[in-house]
Image 1 (cartoon, helix red, strand yellow):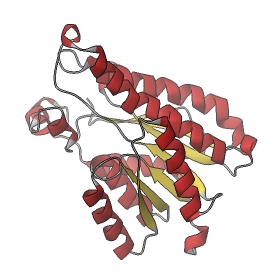
Image 2 (cartoon, rainbow, N blue to C red; image 1 turned 90 degrees about the vertical axis):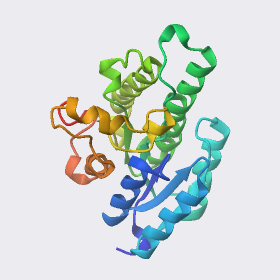
Image 3 (cartoon, rainbow, N blue to C red; image 1 turned 135 degrees about the vertical axis):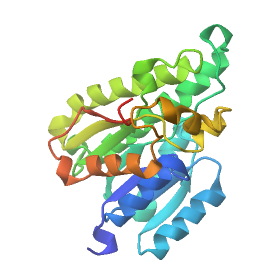
Image 4 (cartoon, one colour; image 1 turned 30 degrees about the horizontal axis):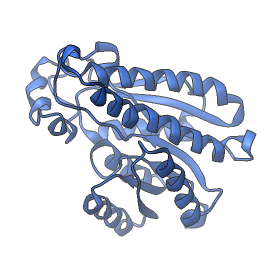
Length: 254
């Protein structure tokens, strides 16, 4: 397949962790990859070099996807660089956690930021993807994979109920959008990771959380980013052609 014929996949928050692992694997499976990042340009460009050196077509695009205007600009930039009709996939991976707190200690500013990054961004990116991929809008179809968390069903008491609630919203978005666009050539699914050994725990003030939690998990270990990426890329593939509106757990039995 020539580079110009490869489908384009946009992965948000892709400079590290699950997003980066997804970008790597998708490139290996024949996708052209648009890597979105908010701040870490060094990590994003390092990933671009890695994928390009392996023969992949890839470019990094800076945007804070919590800002709707930047989302619109991001998709326009992807169109301008790769071609206006090549987008076939979106992975809504960008997300944050915060320090462990009880609900009665939360500020509304914290909760608002959590939903802006974890939920509003997914809605905005899904909207732009549907406008390009849906046959209703003249597109050729495509796939959206949203990232949830086991916290959505556990509730994360005493840690981050706001994060858990934001991920529950993502699962509802998946169900509704999947049904809304199923006849328009789109599939929409969720991958639900458990405790995965990535940098996100450090951002929440618990850098050793994955290692500490491992003995309490059914498989006695935390998951890896590449294991989550494998589930995401399968859902993006034609092997999952009759799967939409689904949530795929990658939790090690948690």
